[in-house]
Length: 275
Image (cartoon, rainbow, N blue to C red; front, top):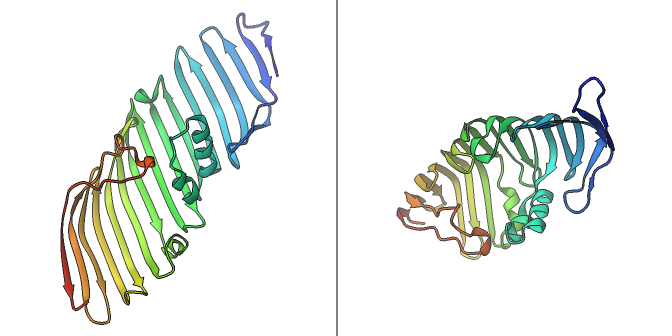
């Protein structure tokens, strides 16, 4: 591309970006030329359409004015595995190899945000994530105000049959899961709370002769605490019920990709009836 000085607007340069390519996992590249405008103290790019990580990114309007970033656009069919692979190559050790192997999801959404940094972002952000392999769908519609977050987050997993590829042959898990939560806190320190529910849960262990069915789960999650109100299964001879509370680790401080997950302190009650 190139820039040309505007005769009618002294100090203003305009031009086009005709080619931009990134190789590797992200595989980014322009789908059509984008308009760029440069003025004293500001930069603007309009109508940018790019391929990114197997999907697309559209920036309807993007500007930098006196250190403040302003952006509006949308994205779709973004392969999260490709994004994480690109992040791992850029900063090794950031993403767990196990996570890279297991994640199979695509993201879509929209954004209209402004700020000088992550700490003071304002605007709206909508995200939809779907995984064909896990038959799961999640969504978040977030409002940002000077770095503060607020908005609902939903997750639906109609079937857990996809876990069979991750488990030994003698184990089987099935059922439905859902999470209805709220995101709060700040962009650089988010908080999540909500209700986790499970229906028609089933757990089978062939070697031990376990066949637990008609399972039901009701739990409440609040950032670093999980309150298990009930986890109940039935069997041919009796039932199993579990309830209690668990303190979860500080994810921000824990190096989860390194391996061990310390669940912290907890208190549970287990009831068995001729299981």
